[in-house]
Image (cartoon, rainbow, N blue to C red; front, side, top):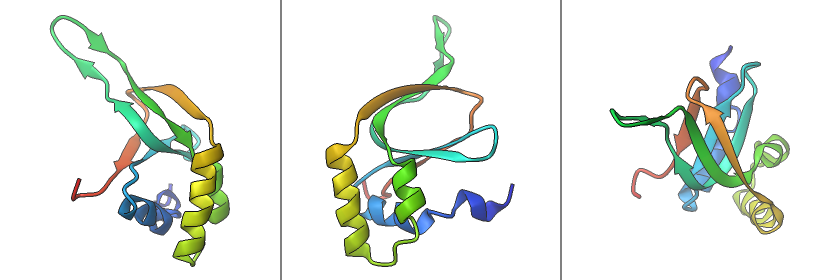
Length: 110
């Protein structure tokens, strides 16, 4: 997979992070990606007593939003469209395998 395909929405993601959002990028087996705004994220863990072999996210799927608006050069327009998605979007919970690559993007100042 080309490095650029992972980062095609990087500028938009950085804009959303600057606004205080955390974005989770999940890489699919076909090298496509799903993107979610994170409301709650639980990473898998192992302990002597028990283990959880999947990660869990609660958030709004913004994959389609980024596909359509990811190259939007106007920051104000991007954020206005994002607010619409956040107001209308359905909150979902998704569990995914610990073997699935993922990236959680957030502000370093939080």
